[in-house]
Length: 633
Picture 1: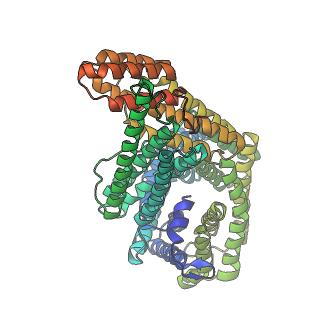
Picture 2 (picture 1 turned 180 degrees about the horizontal axis):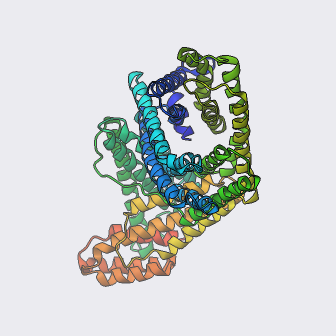
Picture 3 (picture 1 turned 60 degrees about the vertical axis):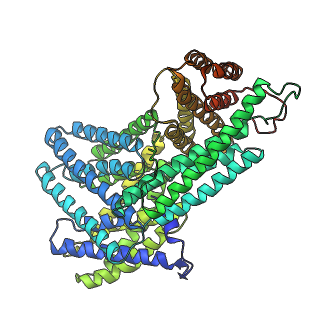
């Protein structure tokens, strides 16, 4: 639902009216005008379903130009894929009865799986592929010859809705998102800088604070893609924002490594050449310089984001996704849809296509949220409100009229009110406003001429509410993946990936990019319930894996430079020590490499620092004197 970006984009101005800032009213006005433009174009072109154009506007209700255009692009792409899938499924299985419903259930599961492997509007596009097939193939399940015309009509309506949103946003100067995103990244930069300063001062390092920072940084990943659609320099801004996020994660990892080091004291002043003490001093100096350099890189990337120029170094921001979690979610979604289809098949009710279509839409959209059951529960609550508002508009406000001007005036209070609700910072209220707006338009189904048959309206409302209830009942019968199960799978994957790190081969992506990927894994753990007491323990262990993996990857990168040099034998011994995952063994290998370095006439400070960092991450407690920092959990 992108609630955070909406509230951030509309909550900056101090001027307010009726409790909402002026920017919220401007956003609501744009939504209303775009919806009227889409409906008018649909009526003028005599589309089969002009309400689909209005629904497109409701779905694309985002406060900034780039966010709306990015989502619109994915909506068009998913619609094209869904139409093609509808034609293929209907053509192959239209006369197979129960087999057709089974194939539709498999398609629902496939779309949910793809959505589970993506994020942001990409996940929405995967879910929309399921919804499009539901709207076309299921609603035309008894008339397969109408699948192609229906698909073309839906594509035309969505195209009109997209054009209406783009035109209104351009004419009314919808704000860009990059200033909001830059401000959020700058705030995160200040927090990471303060964390690093505390580590250098010797303050106790807080694992929960570091995990919160990683969560907040990684949570911005789905939003930076919208910068590419804002302007001609949007691609450069996207690259700058992505690089800034990766550098922030790496700076935080460096600060964590610095805080874990023992104090660099001379354990024996009689022996100033003490090996371990000098290694600690080398590591502290190296990490401090790297933190300063990375902090400077972040400032440069933020400057490039503001200016719209390419960053000096571009990083990729890979996303971690668990195939196991996606597969289990897909399996449950397919079963949910199949159970609902069986209920309708056994009941033998006429005209249940709308109900099954809406159930598929709720199942698909819930799969893109952290809490599918919570989303479905919210849909159950929003549906009767939407039906009530639709009934009031149809039979009390419009009351038989067909003039477009009266339609525009009648829609204004509901559309503007729900758009204002969408801008609220509360995730629940914002999602509720969007659902009510979409469901209300689906129930009202504005057309030209408007139908005022009360029996049809009551049946539609009944089946819509039944669809939401059945989707919720199916999730109660076969619960969606629980937060505890999701956390267990994510933590097991973190442990497994740490064990599988192989330092005998070149590793891709780069250590900085791999650290960001690990940060997205921690963000998913925290989003799944890391705030509870048990969840905090899991987050602490995940942070431990994060530190160890970052240290190992850095060691590998540094040791590769010695693979073909005079210190190749010492480097090989260091690699063997790393495979032991024992801090004392790794530290001993660092001492051996330090003694061999003068013979090879090679500067080994970065390599020594990486090995000391790894020895600390894997539990080496030497030297014991002067260590006041927090140990790894």
